[in-house]
Length: 421
Image 1 (cartoon, rainbow, N blue to C red):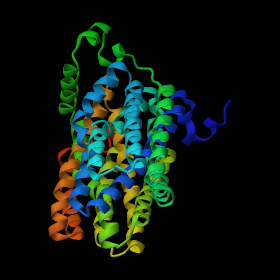
Image 2: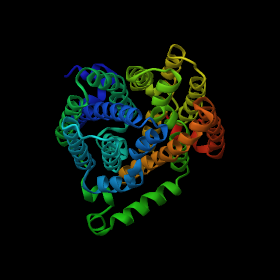
Image 3: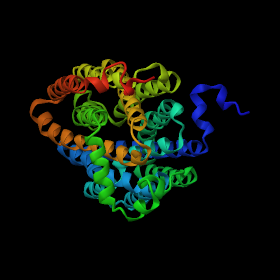
Image 4: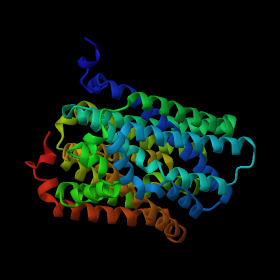
């Protein structure tokens, strides 16, 4: 008897795959956060342009349209195999950036090109993580497992942001990128060890013959039709698109603007801001890993979305870090509740053979972040951050209410399957 079962929150670690996947996801998330902070600040300082910062942030999501195809591949050859290949790409690109930095020939153009290449793959990473957890985890432990899995991202936003800022300040970009490349390499090895149990025949269809001969495009169309004809899934994807369009740009990509232009701070100020959002999210993830079974998942998504927009609205009018950072912690808690509950609800309420495609389509909603960032850039230049953020939050609150009304039976009714504890 291992000690793990005595602590309910740690029960998912009884699954061998999860014991390898969790540290693999942790290493990847740390590298993501360090990379985003370092390169975002580099672009802003070297170009002096908020527009170029939003272009950089948008390039990281350019491959969102490919996310469903990564889901198709995961359903066919195993989500662990696809995830390991994706992370090998990150390692190669980080190594290229490290070489450019150490040879002192790095320019913002290089950063934008490599960010675009990474952006073809990176948006699918979170969805593939969730699909791999859903593939290997018993249904009764899914909410707790997703909460624990989410801590890899939240802790990375704390440690990765502070570590990235500290490494650059102490050693420079070259050594910092060496650390990033090492994190990615570790994640590849651990992801291969995590593996998964789904075969192509089992995943892509009911029979081996169908799986062997159906085209990837057929699988994708089948997944899209499944979402379109399932009201609950369509409602959840609608919320996902909305928050990526109007909340995530304020919560992630535009924080450097607040740190530099409103708080008159430096990279360290930005690191503390990112860490505060992550600390709140980590609190939310840990709470769900322990007490997730006490919540009504679909209702929690709607309520937490409204709370997130409210916190972002308050943050938009916080004049200094002393008042802004506590609000960012509250926003982080709300954001974590939404993300964990949404992933769990999608996996619980979709057929197993569709899970990779469903999570890929869920990641397609990230595409909303790209226009959200690109529209915000000119608006901030003309009207300022506070007014732009207020507009985004008001739109988000209004459409959250509309979605809750439109899919009331699936999202709000206590007896709805999505609200099963």
